[in-house]
Image 1 (cartoon, rainbow, N blue to C red):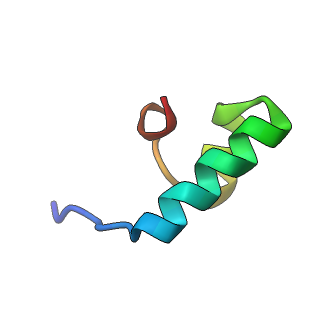
Image 2: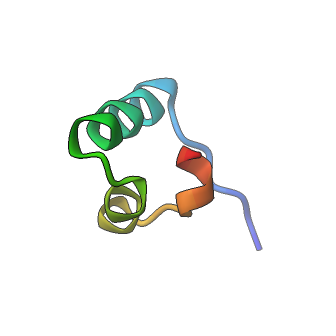
Image 3: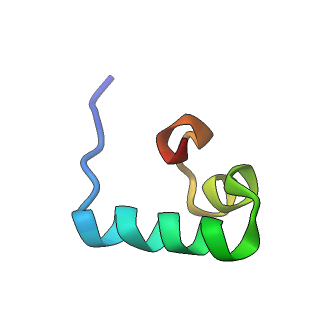
Length: 39
């Protein structure tokens, strides 16, 4: 299994979106990443 690499911009976008919505799990599912990545 290969690791995916995410750009810093993508990570910042997810964090900002999660803080605006208030639900990190929902944002993670929408973008296809593990919710643990946002925590």
